[in-house]
Image 1 (tube, one colour):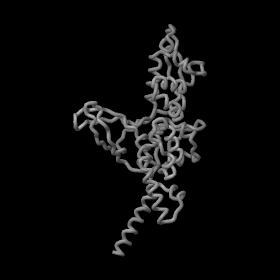
Image 2 (cartoon, rainbow, N blue to C red):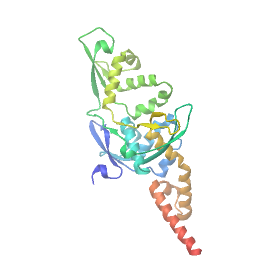
Image 3 (spheres, one colour):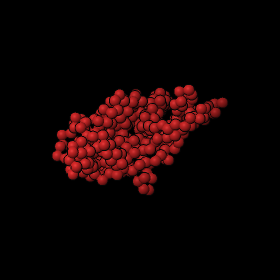
Image 4 (cartoon, rainbow, N blue to C red):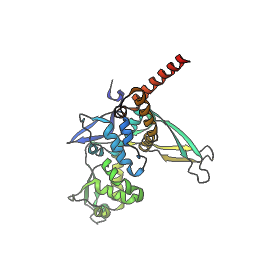
Length: 305
């Protein structure tokens, strides 16, 4: 069985670097009840990035040969790789099929729309990752507006990771342009001989220079393509929408928190297991025992009928 065929094993569409060595193979396991409990409140968009870090830190068994997975390691994963791993976790925890409800964006309609799709069919854009730092050369007159027609400046940058996502998530909600500015200041490592990069220096870059840097980043990063199209059956408006699989999966786990406690109650009541023992089980294992228990109770009831 190859890596891609093994349950929970996958290959990053991007790459993870540690001490200059690149790793792409990852082994996952489904979240336990304890992790589901930890993620209560994860539907709050302000803490989505940190909730993804918590989820992956508990559910990644290894990255290449690395088996001690810390939150800091997870923060150093590229944003696209984090999204990909959450998608894979959703597949091994709940399944491939996604069923959701949208609201028609037509203000005169507002009809609820059922959508469903298979995660196996979601396009995954592979990253073009050859190193941790990348370079783009810009004409100096375009970068800083200086009239030096034969001179270029060398811009070195890294790609956005989970740490950037966590740090800038609240700002991105209130001021997207400022968040982009801060992101560039975090990701740009050097402009010619300048290594102290701050927002004031990023502000001096011309719009065309910023656009070129952002375009190059977009070409390099791995990405899940979940920009989808739907048609309202009521008013027939066709619209596109981004589907956030990370938010959706965390919401699914939160919605089922009451069910988790019911499962703990029944298993503790009949099997006399401790709460800690039951919460250490994955959803699939808990429900396997609940299925066996249900069958046993049904047989007993038939025997007394």
